[in-house]
Image (cartoon, rainbow over all chains, first blue to last red; front, top):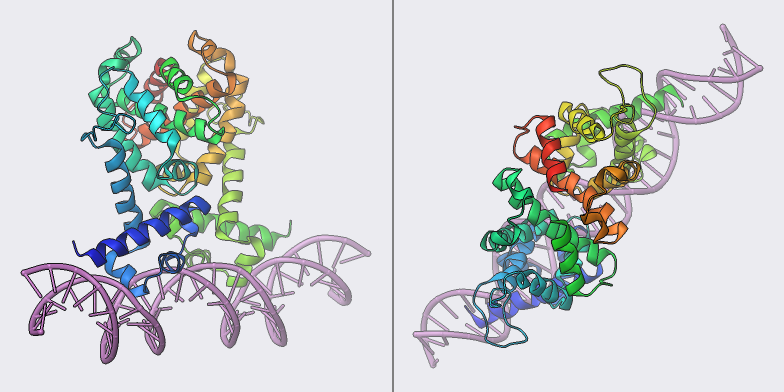
Length: 183
Length: 183
DNA sequence: TATTAACTGAACATTATGTTCAGTAACGAA
DNA sequence: TTCGTTACTGAACATAATGTTCAGTTAATA
C-alpha cells in the first residue's frame, strides 16, 4: 500500500476516533473529519464511499486487533485467545476493554451504534462458540442452541454496557463474576 | 385540543408509522413525512421541533398504550397489567407484541433505534419492578440489585429481538418459557 | 529520473433542514 | 351566526451537508 494512502487512512481513522470520543456517530460530518484529518474532501471519498463505510472498516480493524487469534507474545498485551485458563478468556476481554485503548467503550455507550454493536456481537459469537463448554449448565438444555448462544452474547454485551454506563466502578474481576453469575 | 391539530398530528403519526415499516428511522426525511401526511412543511415544524422529537413523542404514545395500567375491560384486549396470574404478565406482553398492532416489532428489528429501545427498556423497568418476586432465584443474590434488574430487562429485550429476527416462529408461550428458562 | 498514482482545492449540483411570512380556512365560544 | 383566534398553506429563503468533478501539484516507486 502506498505510503500516502496509508498516512491518509491513518489520519482519517485518528480524526474519526477523536471525534467519536466527543459525539455520536450520527452527528459527525464528513467535513469535520477532513478538517481534523487535514485532507481534501475528494481524498476522503477516494478512500471511503460514505461515512457508513468508514465506520464499517473502522470496526473491522478495531475488532481484528481485539479478537484476532494471532497473539503478540508480549505478556501484558497478550491476546485474549492466548490465555490457557478457560473462563479467564472473558476476564481478559473485560480487562482489555477497561483499558479502552481504541475508544471502544465510547462507541458502545453512544447512541446510533447498531452497526458497531452488530460487529461486536459477530466477533463475540466466535469467542462464545469456542468456549461453549463454559456455559453447559442445566439452562442450556431447556432452550434451542442458537437461542442459547444469542443469550450468552447478549448478556455479555449487556453486562459490558451496564459496566460502562455505571462508570466502570467495578473491577474486571467483579464484572466477570457478575457475568457468570447470571448467564 | 383543536380538531385541526389532532388531525394533523394523527396524519403525521400515520405517515411516520407507514414509513417506519419501510425503512430505518435515520433514512426517513421530513420531506417524505409531510408528503405522505399531505401537510405543509411549516405545519410539521409547528408540531415537532425535529424528527427526533417526533420519534420521542411517537414512542411515548406507543408505550403508553402498551404499558399503561388502565385496563379497557375487553377480555381479548385487556391490558397486560390486568391479568392476575403472576408470570403470565410477560406471556401477555409477548402476545400483545406478536399482534404488532403498532409496528413496534418493526422498530425493534430496525437499526438506529437506540432511542426507541431506551423507551422500551424504561417502560419494562416499571413492569419488572412490579414483578421482581418472579425472579427471586439464587442468582439474584449474587449480584447487585440494579445489575439484576438491568439483566432481566436486557434479557427480555434480547429475547424479543431474537424472536423477531427469527421470524416469530415460536408461539408466545414457548418464548415465555425460553425467557424464564434463561433469566 | 521517469512514470505512475495519490492528494489538492475549489467549484458544482443535489438534497435535507429549519425558518419566515402573508394569505386562507377552520375552529370554538358567545 | 358571528367574530376573534388559531392552525394550516405554500412558497421562498438561508444554511449546511453530501458526493462529484477536474485540472494542477506532489510524492512514491521502479
